[in-house]
Amino acid sequence: MRAADLFVRCLENEGVEVVFGVPGEENLDLLDALSDSPIRFVPTRHEQGAAFMADVHGRLTGRAGVCLSTLGPGSTNLVTGVADATMDGAPLVAISGQASTARVHKQSHQVIDLVRMFEPITKYGARVRAAKTIPEIVRKAFKVAQTETPGACFIELPEDVAAVEIQGLSPLKRQSPLSPIAPPEKITEAARVISEAKWPLILAGHGVIRAGASADLVRFAETLNIPVATTFMAKGVIPFSHPLSVGAVGLKTRDYASTAFEAADLIVCVGFDMVEYRPYLWHKGISAKLIHIHAMPAEVDEDYILEVGVLGRIGWSLEAIAAEATPHSRSHGPELHAALLAEMAHFAGDEAFPLKPQRILSDLRRALDPDDLVISDVGAHKVWVARMYSAERPNTCLMSNGLAAMGIAVPGALAAKMLFPERKVVAVTGDGGFMFNSQELETAVRERTPYIVLIWNDSGYGLIEWKQLAQLGRTFGVRFTNPDLVEYARSFGARGYRVTAAGDLLPILRRALEDPVVSVIDCPVDYSENLIQVEHLGGNVYEDGGEAFSPWPGPSAFST
Image: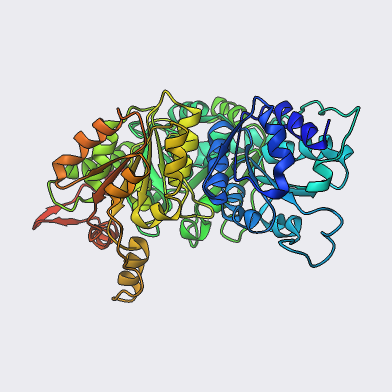
């Protein structure tokens, strides 16, 4: 057999079921080997789309998603999605063809040192220089990609190596390390610090989801009566409807959850990765003690100095600490939770057009079941999704956060729907982010993968405009024109819908969810709410049509 056949057998050994990618001259043997494999190959319309699909596949399964490109520009197009996976802790293996080993050492057509190029954005990278190394390189790439903290790995396969005839080689046995349990003295110390605190707060990060410890976190919070704030990436780790849930954090403004941080004398960070929410935004100048519960040590940061670090299996650590700590008789969680619910209810029936972000998210939540999936792109809408979309389950609201890369929603939703065809999937995107990878609508139609693309249309880069107005008082370079998005969708063979009144959205969503093909909804949005929201969160008063709306009932829960 060829080395390329062995490579594919190694992928099969790793449990790979799908490879996303773009064919090229230098990966012909690998593609030919895939044609004889049960692994599904999904040709995408751009390598960035392939990388984002692999990224979301890894996020949702915990198993490395796989993307494939050819050399040169094919590989450079993978970079954004590969970097996104590493920064967001998503296991991914990127594979690229390469020129013959006879010319990779010198200046040659389309040849760049790919391993060096990917080095800063991957956990491991290697060039296959000899066919006999394939089993080790593939096994190591998947092992490293999937080991906490997960991320991307890269393999370069030169075309002459792929074509070599070999005998007597086979994939290596799959082995995965098991995280140790935390030392008993650290459990006891953490329990003591939690018991002595007056107003503890839990900050839950994406590591909780990766560890499968969401139920453990909820039991821990309930047992000790401690409110829970989540990062954007950990939305749903505690049901939004739970009275101890105070919402997601990560906004650069004062939200209800921010008041919980201000009142806290102890913040218990569980599965928290620093890339999710920089500590200087929530802990600088605050005297609250910090406990770090994770499978990995804390990053060194001047605003993240620990009182106690508990390293080991997150679920086990939470159960052990809860068994030793003293439950708290009072909590500010229900009061903050009620404030957020009141604000959301206030806008649920708003009839303004273009639609306010709060109304869009209210209708989206009403259209979806708790297990359905939302993949959010990056832009002004992401801030609203992070703050106000009420996720009830872990890994049901995904967004790029560490790298914050525009263009992930359309390809990411395709990967999600392929994984979970029985669940409804919605890509929530701005008109800017939509056009970054809108070409993947063709992939979705060809692959018969129906999901919704909900476009928040403001004919501009809304998040940058928001920042310009807030900081400079004027805007520049952020406006553009769109094609007719409904006709654009139909040109791919997709369904297209246009929202022309606030009352249109929910019926359109429900109809589109039943469509047998991917559907695009063009929904005009009023982003003037952005600056109003900043003023509201800063002063906790919302002016709406002359009527003062103040859902925050006051700091009574913090009284001593």
